[in-house]
Amino acid sequence: MITVEQHLARITDGVRPLPSEEVPIIDGVGRVLAEPLLALHPVPPFTNSAMDGFAVRAAVATPGVWLPVRGDVPAGPVEPAPLEPGTAQRIMTGAPLPEGADAIVPVEDTDQPRGPAPLPERVRIDAAPVAGRFVRRAGEDVAPGAEVLPAGTLLTPAAVAAAISVGHGTARVHRRPRVVVLSTGAELRPAGEPLEPGQIPDSNGPLLAALARGEGAEVLYAASTGDGTEEFAAALHTALAADVVVTSGGASAGAFDVVKEVAEPLGVEFVEVAMQPGKPQGHGWLQPAPDGEVAGAAAGA
Image 1: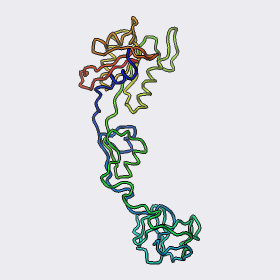
Image 2 (image 1 turned 60 degrees about the vertical axis):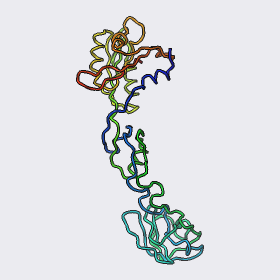
Image 3 (image 1 turned 90 degrees about the vertical axis):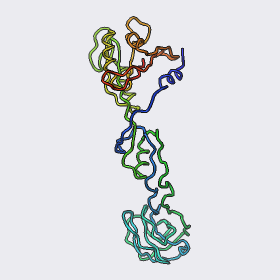
Image 4 (image 1 turned 90 degrees about the horizontal axis):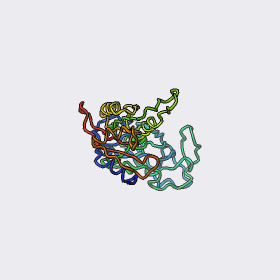
């Protein structure tokens, strides 16, 4: 008997990455990067304000001083005028810092109201700014060419946002593994169908299919077969168009355990795993199907 960890190691030993493809970045969610993503531009892409307030020169913006306001700098594709000595410009969060400014005075540290308001002629500075404070310098978070996401990263929504922020619209990701689930047992009935004496709903098959989908696999189909070896062998042969075949039932020592009877001569290894239920387990690498598709690993559940 082996442990669950030992059995898992045997199953994953020899697994290789699937081929990769380039996809729109939003379509890559739940898939794995096949190559690292490097920053195509700096983050931030330009020096900008981290606060709503006033762009100033810190040396002249002493507490109590009144500075004439020479214009607005909104966020967006604008090129602000250089800051004239001894003046201020009203600036919004994310707007480019005017040339000549080295600090931001938040609106809360002035005599001006928060929110929408007409551009004032002048502003009173109530708290001394520090040069560089509330200023986000171009490239201070990420420099061009820096590795943002290494190969092998699972693309989560946050990872997608990070990729977009550094200039990517597509990503090279591994193809989703194609999975077929086969449940065995003449007593199984599809979900929702009425039961005859001796029958039970096939709940394991949908469970395994849902788990596979939840891990990012493409489930080609989930089906059930009876307890005949010819029926299961035909179903297994068809299923080998997938990358992975997961079976449920038929792997123990019963008289009708067709999975073991059919798959063991093909090289599938059956073992006892230290878990209950699920003690009888099997795995193996089967030969390619005649149509040339990749063979699957059969695992009893």
